[in-house]
Amino acid sequence: MEEELAAIRRWEATVEALVGWDPVGARLRRRQSGGGPLSGWSLGVKDIIDVQGMPTRCNVDFLPETPAREHAGVVGRLLSLGAFVLSKTVTTTFAFLDPGATRNPWNPGHTPGGSSSGSAAAVACGMVRLALGSQTVASVNRPASYCGVTGFKPTFGRLPVTGVFPFSPSVDTVGLFTCGVSDMQQAAAALLGEPVAEEPGRLRIGLAPDLHTKPAEGLMLRALSEAGERLAARGCQVTTVTLPEECAAAYRNHFDLIAAEGARGHAELMARHGDRYPPKLRALLLDGEAVTPEALKGIQEHRRSLTVSLSGLLEEVDLVLSPSAEGAAHRGLAITGDPRFSLLWTYTGCPTVTLPAALSPEGLPLGLQLSARPMADGALLAAARTVEALLGFHARPG
View 1: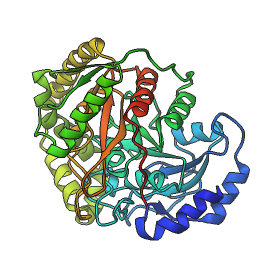
View 2: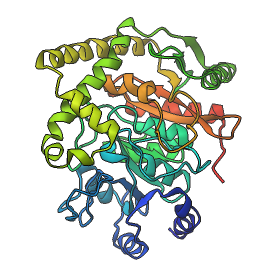
View 3: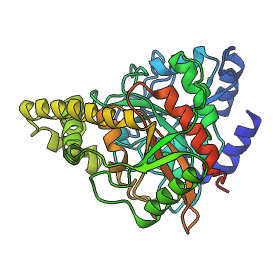
């Protein structure tokens, strides 16, 4: 913990990853933590997730500052495994695209991504060993890519979302950040109540440069291609795969879905505080009011069909390797980046993990995304550990 406190003293004034930082309270919670497989692990908690005794602010100033009465389900589970809450972490406003205060630790003039910006940055800086985020489109995978850490979005529904401020219940998923896959395997196995899966034999990897949306930038596609070449040279079976054509409809469908469900969830707050909502979120929620029940029914039917199609593809390979973001983190803090590169896996509920794979010419990380069929979380992380070792990326910020 002393190393983490030193990291906070070094980084926090520049990066601004933490919310309501209280070193005295953090030490007390550390002393009160119990035993278990995650004993002594420090935890950062995205500030849309309840921690008993702390307010949940969601990066707005119009929610009551009343402390949460109970821990969110995932927080309570982690504490029962021996972890302790070191601090809340910064989120974008209500976990959408309008940015929060956090800066990228690799270069504070660049975005850390969103919406789990503080969680990814805190792990990258060594402030916490484990951090919680959430993903409704790409809010774990994209900041993991931009901040050069491991980000894991499990299969939809595998971790509880009780005590997490909802956005779109059909797709909202709690995710995790760590500095490497070994820690992620330990944390995920403990949370899911499973043993750590054994690393596989010869991996079958499908490269997916084309996600049926706009292409990633050249440097990201080059990183993907070079990763495929390195993995093939080290014994993996690497092929380029073609994703189903029906993926193309997922992008519009997904944003209509989260807009409609978000509009319902925010109706009361929008009625009272709509003029205080940031522009991107306000526009989405207003659009969501026009999505009809018939349109939502069609979207859910398409989701089920696409999930079956992708699951069939994922029976032919152990994982799909694709870009986690358009490229490296954008310069400036006004935008958090394009979320579409993780959207397919959120839309279909597939587990996915982002690993840092290369550096851009500006020295910013580029993350690649490994995805597997639903419920193959442990096998995916075991494969990710193999890929991590074969790619051999070890750079850290600072």
